[in-house]
Image (cartoon, rainbow, N blue to C red; front, side, top):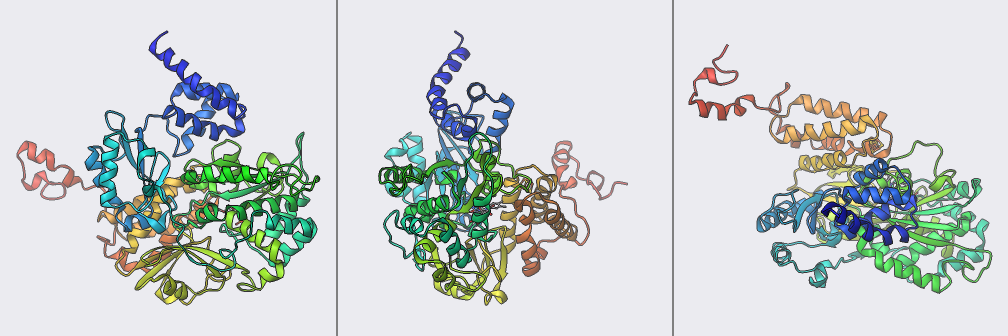
Length: 607
Ligand SMILES: Cc1cc2nc3c(=O)[nH]c(=O)nc-3n(C[C@H](O)[C@H](O)[C@H](O)COP(=O)(O)O)c2cc1C
Ligand code: SF4
């Protein structure tokens, strides 16, 4: 056997138990690829071939899927793979300088693997630790609160090849940072309490309570939850294995959002109760929790919780002692793709495909996971459903405002003294939130992440509510010292990086916008670029296939209107200015030829 064959033989040997464990099911391809990468270090060509054979898919398709997710890699990464979180709040806390320090200490270039294959250092989109940044991931594990001292220790341990299991536990400690408790975060019920309440009410009465509550989705779009549940309950199941599904969207990829992380860490029973209540109410037998890859560290505790619930009769057949009720939950891990938070992209990803948003209609409630009626809800929405099961819809509707009932979790980060999670009744003013978290002299707040809105000081009397300032939860505060142009530039790069590439306006538009912002940053900007950004914003808004493209220029649009001087002081001229300086590029040639007369300069003495 050649060395190559031996390699292939070894690969097969390592892959067998993985593909068998996932029943060679192509719908579990993403999970198989994740596990395979863990076993092999990366996904070599031979592994893709073997996996394609095992799940009976064309190899090109498997490669296309593996190439889609940023946490999967087809070429070797370092044995220690370091990914710095690159949200603007991480940058404000010095992440760029810390990454440079680590690269210098390890003698490596950012984005490259060290010659001995030991380590690679790169950036990744927001890791959901903005309240305790700067943060990074090492081999998928989260390390918050990175400091100069920690970077120095980390570089020593990597060089000495100390296994991650031997690093001090406190390096991996992710705090909840709960700062304000209201209706949701004060709950201390035992597991299953809310399910029993929902079962006692009965499915129809539970739906009626949901209607009364006027609960709206907490994942961003604010769709009325009861309409979703009722539509799924009425929708016909199809095929040989007719089923309904409940999907919990725990992708939480919007930069600046980390509330679902806290709910999954400390309120997991409420999340699972909520999923189960949705299941028994709409008549679904299966729940799927899609956990973002960055939160992999939460997986063991969540799995252990599911096991406990099965043992305690809170999952599986004869749910809560009722032989006519059955519901179980599986957890699927994502692999670093923000677009997979979009509900139809998430369903594609759950089915083991590239996370490309589907064309709607049909909507998930009628044809979702595997073409079956599916309820997709955010983690927080499902927790709220559990509260409604226990306390009733009228109680819930009595909180917040008429159009925005209940409370809302805010993930607060940036220039504040007390970053963390705040539970507020809807209708709270921006000014009150800023006061509570110790924001000092804030010049701006980015509400609901880069796809949300940027508010300036004259808008701080506005209120968090669907009818005023809607939000999925992110609340990033920028003090007077911050450069709002750089904030918008960071967001522009985020969208260019995260565009799934399916539709041209978004794929090309987000890249063009990021280029325009870089050109302005590099001192070659003009009014031309500003006009371009406005034009692309209109195009993206009107012609993008999904919400990612539609909202990709929101922050730029807002900052251009509200913080125009941050852009204008960088503009060189009113007319077009080339990004490339030809005269500067000829400097080396002038030096080599010993010429520095006017004719050797572009645009000077030559005719
Ligand atoms: C690009 C994009 C990313 C999204 N990311 C998330 C996410 O991480 N979590 C989430 O719950 N909803 C996210 N959404 C919204 C979902 O598509 C969907 O509206 C939501 O999961 C529905 O749940 P809800 O009704 O409980 O809010 C995203 C939407 C878009 C367009
Ligand atoms: S808008 Fe962007 S993210 Fe959405 S489908 Fe088109 S390319 Fe993909």
